[in-house]
Length: 368
Image (tube, rainbow, N blue to C red):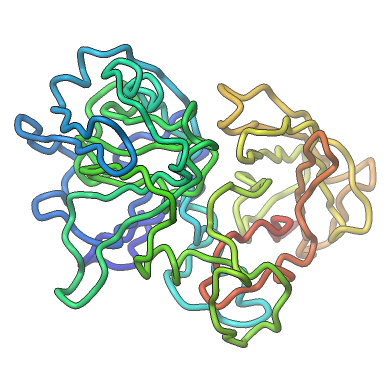
């Protein structure tokens, strides 16, 4: 693993490990924590005997549900890509450096989550949510980083997630490890990981979104293009929350600066988005984006999962790659059913915090 911060356990997965597994094993799954729950920096399950979830706000009646009650309810399984909102942040540095962990491609994982759907939980408990409730705000059991800081919490549109949000207790067929948010984690397929709150302890049904700085000031991108290197004021009117994952694709192999010799060259990777619109194609360029050809796109495990893709290039014979010790520029981009794709110049969406990078992925390989 790539260690960005040993003290708070900020870990990135090398693509060489990601590409080996359909579902990312717990020991190879990236780690990012805004706050730390004491005793949670372990792959073992967190003690759950006394774990409760509070349901409050514009819901009647308010309830506290024990984890043992969750296990008795109908379980739903969902395969989804979990991606840090800052994944790919390092690539913004091509224009201007941003703040935060300089993730490249490995701040993500594909995971099988199992738990109780939010709507199923409300129905099973016969809870009524007010028509005035527009947002779902999630809190974890982890304390604020400092006594003076706001506690970490995030708000999402209730209507948008009511049927998809999962109160997950299992990951890849076993209890969620403590370091990955167990024993209870909010999982919203298609949303960035920052909204998938770990160590879930309270859900609030509210008319307005959270005023915590983590929601109101952090994890936001500007609606209009800003000049790289500048830091405009963050307001609700000028920015968007990091909710839905943008369409994206990455190259798994060859790896960056890998040496290749005459013969066939396998190129592979994955594409994904927020699962709301079908991904219909992926294209590969071997000449720095001047020309493009379609690659073989495979069926994902779920609409929210990775769409594997692959192609075979030949060092000699068809002109796709040029011999002679050159450094070749491979690029990939994906398209959804509405024709939306990745910008070739990813820094068009530059923001000071480096969120939501989804530019065309580029890998240089050495031909010998």
